[in-house]
Length: 195
Image 1 (cartoon, rainbow, N blue to C red):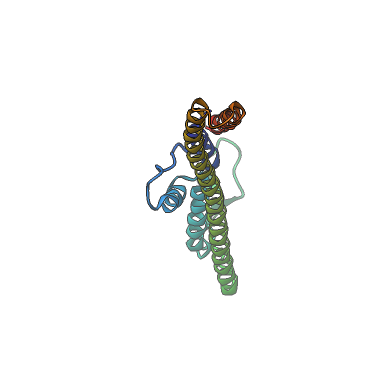
Image 2 (tube, one colour):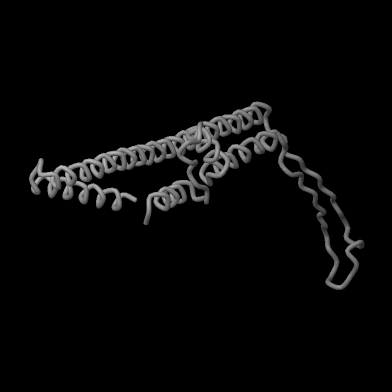
């Protein structure tokens, strides 16, 4: 797995979506990543939906309970006869009206639930942002390390060529050439392993 594949794989695991890291020279890369996390993270979306659901319950808490409507028959005639011949028919309508402070306390409880969900949303957003920042700067440091290793490798390769030229001219020993070649090979292997 090369270096860019690793970055994409970690981003997908972290946010559950398919988007890639910005290019090396792009400005505001972290800010863009945080905006993308805000709009694409399933955790943040779920927290936003919980806030909306809690806000929708505030008006519901002010509503009265459902009314009850009914009909009662007394002295019902034998089966098969018309119910209209019953001696007494009673129609009912009932509406429970709670004490006003109970309605206010339900509204306050729903408002507190909204505040709690907003804080949960804020906490979730901060956690996702912390994960994105940790990932971003971890990969940034790996990228810087690879660049430094590549720069060092180019210096070692130039030094290797110079040492070989000095060896050919008789100004240095073959052991110096071997040391430089070993160091260059080690660094090449490290760079290849990181990528």
